[in-house]
Length: 259
Image 1 (tube, rainbow, N blue to C red):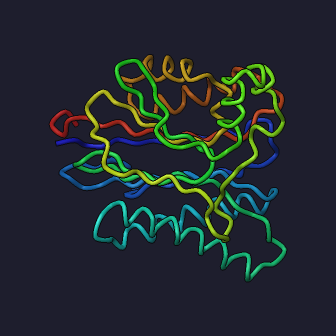
Image 2 (tube, rainbow, N blue to C red):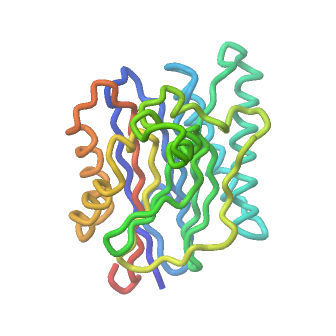
């Protein structure tokens, strides 16, 4: 039986304010065992200083509150929690019209005895690190995949695709309106000791996937707290003068008897 250990760290980057939010449940001791699930959610806000921060925190709080009430299946719980987060933002905007236009990305996950299940909207990535390699699990709802496809077809150069100013425009976000695109896992992804699951805001993309993998591998045995700190440090060490907010939430499954 697996036990899940988790940790989260964040940086404002070059921004004057922080628009990311993250939450876990249980929150007082972010580790679970004996078949108990761990719930994790991360949101990257948009809509300016106040709006983005309010949107991301509102979404995370509503997501955790809704998913704890249960449902017939984890898939149904994840979708209901996403809808609750979207409704919470709609209600907040209705009561505060000056915040119209605020919203956020969202990636939420349940870690349980059957493995990992998730829901996401936007471009906040969900990665699985296993055996030295890293894989993106969720869909990217920005224009980046479309631009990369144009590059693969030879209609743009790789350099043009990566520097295109439209690259980070979102095709779907949690704004209180209808959700255009939702990525909802169809079945649990089994996890094993030695894996590392990373939820992050798109500020992590300052690092290439192989850099993320090397950083996780180097600190894997030290646990999620050390990995989270190392990833944030790696982003800050790049020194990007336009660095976006970056938040990481790490979850490590280990055998319960090892814990």
